[in-house]
Amino acid sequence: MITSLRILITGASSLPGFKTTIEALKRGHSVLALYYKNPITIRHERLKIMEVDIRNISELNSVVINYKPECVIHMAALGDVDLCEKERDLAWKTTAEPSIALARLASSIKFFSVYLSTDYVFDGERGNYDEDDVPNPINYYGLVKMVGEVAFMSSGADYAIVRASSIYGLGPGRVNFAKFLIEKIEKGEEVRALIDQYTSPTYAQLLGEAVLEIVERGLVVIFHVAGERMSRYEFALKIAEKLGLNKELIKKAEMKDMKWSAKRPKDSSLNSERTRKILKTDFYSLDKALQDLKNEYMREGIT
Image 1: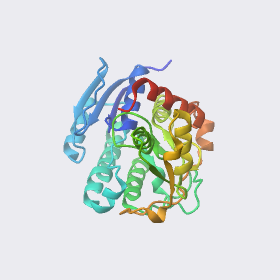
Image 2 (image 1 turned 120 degrees about the vertical axis):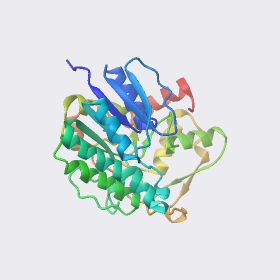
Image 3 (image 1 turned 90 degrees about the horizontal axis):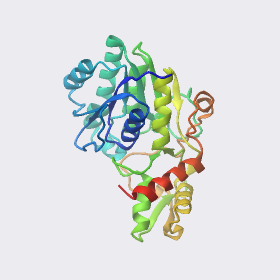
């Protein structure tokens, strides 16, 4: 039987942070949810909510030390890839420095850490990256996320690194591809989707479930929690088909046509075979993920 844990979650107002917070509460844990600017709408007797600018390292350290968590799930980051490229100092202070600080704290006051990382730590030259492949980021976002990985790996504390890919779902946080697609098609507007960029889309709800399984079992290793490899265009068609949206509005596009500030990996798809052998959570099944997305869409609409 799993005992209740004291869990601190950074980035709790992001989509993955929000879903992970709900899952932790559902499983009977106590949570301190940290957010910045975007308020958290959940209310629960075992939930404490605190606004913290994680760039203020002394404040972040103080909050963690005072709460005395048994586990920290670190999901806060500057997730805008182009903004990271243009505002490198901001990206470093928002993503790299807090990760380094939390890794140091984990080493000194001993708590289990789960660090949410990304497929963008890889260069995308071949795809199908497994958990032991060596990162080689081609943009600054991937670099600062890799710095976080290295910080936890070298901390000497117990940690898990969870790499995800193209996290999607409905709820708060930045607009992800699936939410963007649904909003545009509902308005009768065309959506350009790439035929030559490949990822392994990760449904946020299933990511939260996988993270909590890792926490409860205290699993110390690198995980790839991601779905099937597909192009953005293929993914868009599958979402539209499942939700009964107009597929005619989805138009093909190529990476060369995009006006990005940062380079993007051509194929950053993740191989999660090893992770699937370890975890019981069915995070990989596209049918299950899209059915859950449909249920969420029918129940709540776009939020």
